[in-house]
Image (cartoon, rainbow, N blue to C red; front, top):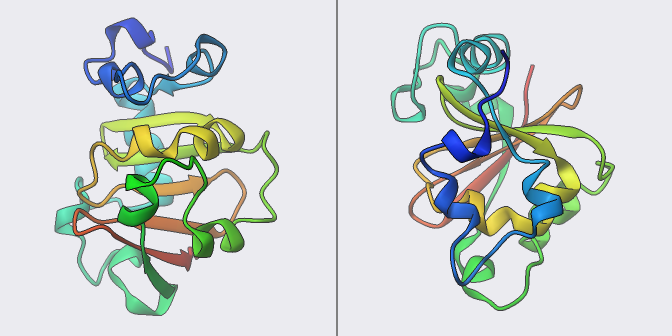
Length: 158
């Protein structure tokens, strides 16, 4: 089994928050990965030796500055009443089609799969946990990492 039912996902409250409720049709598109599948995605796309973003090293591509090109802040956009992505992020990912599968990777055993359109509309919900998660698009090189100081960085993975 590759997915957990959203009802069994212990952090599903982030999608039912009273200030940012996600409509039922979009909730169907947010799929928590089962631990084994999450670990496989993490190992293939992020790191084989590190299990949490706070522990990346120079051995991990994520820990190497050469893969990151720009930095900006997401917090003011998150605090606004608009659902729009921060402008730099929107521009950097503008070629992504709404149907692209994306992975929002909190740590090796905690990854959510959804479509880009769903993530784009509800990105604020995903960032209730902001200690280094990474946004990847399937078959895309662009990547975004978010930090708890309200910043993010954009890069291209190898």
